Length: 202
Image (cartoon, rainbow, N blue to C red; front, top):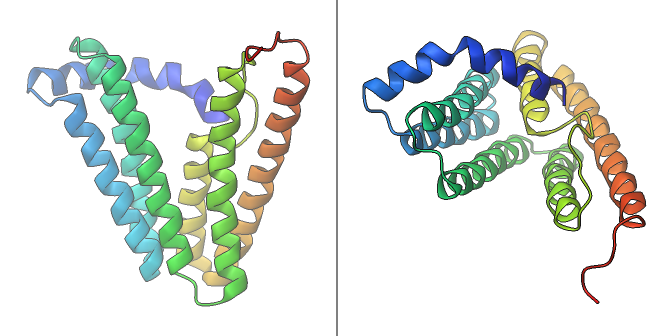
C-alpha cells in the first residue's frame, strides 16, 4: 500500500528511461525475464546465506518490475497477454525468494517461519483475486502487498548482513506479523463486502 502510493511519482521520474529502453529495442517481456532471473538469484543467495547479494537482487527485481510496464506503455506493447506474463513471472519470482529463505535454514522452527511467510503471502494475493472476482474492491487494503513484502525483505537482508542471523530471524518474524495483519484485514473486508454484493452463482 505504501509503496503503491509512490508508483506515480516514480513512474514520472523514470519516463526518460522508458523511452530510452524502448528506443534501443528492449522488449518489455525481456525485462520481465530479467526481473525473474534476479529473483531466482535472490532466492539462491538467501539459501546460501549471502544476504547482501539477496538484497541487491531484490532491489534489481523491483526496478525491472517498474521498467517492464513503463516500456510496454511508451512502446505500444501494452496488452492483456503481457500483463498476464508479468503477473505470472512476479509470482514465480516471489516463490523462488521464499523457497530460498526456507532452504537457508536448518532449524525446523526457522523453516516454518519462512514457510509461513510464503503461504500467507499467497493468501494475500488470493484474497484480492477472489474478492475482486466476486465484486469486492481491495485497492489499498493491507500494509503488505507484494512491493512492501519485497521491500521489507530487502531491509531484512541488509540488517542480517550487518548484525547477523539472529536479527534476520527477528526481522522475518516482524514481516510475518505484518503479513498476517494484512491477511486478516483483507479477509474481513471481503467477508463484510460480500454481504453487500448480489450472489453471482444462483
